[in-house]
Length: 180
Image (cartoon, rainbow, N blue to C red):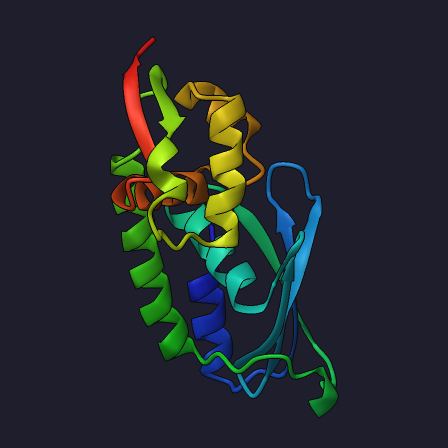
């Protein structure tokens, strides 16, 4: 099985220009593509994700979640107007290593599914700054206070939900009330 990093390393050695199409190995379902110009990723699409986020998600899925992909390398003319990003192999390796490390850390911090949360009522009295994503999750806490239900109903993927919960807890925006 080839990983995305190994495919990109091979293409880097020949300064590849073209498309790398990506398919799920289990179903041959099309996932997305990477567009390279002289071995530099200039555009990436993976399901609903775009550019660097898409590339890092594929690497995360391979590395942490053991998802297997098929990569189809096709040389083609790539025009400059297709350039949406600039990500070379060395930068990608550094960012992927950091991202995978952060995700593994976040997964170790995932709270037990039976904990019950509540929004800190003093939140409005304090001058706590929360992000849009944190606000959306905070509204979900009020309707789904049990952690297991919260994860089931969150619009965010599990790792981001955990990261947001940690941030909200650190800001004292949510309180753990009990185990159910």
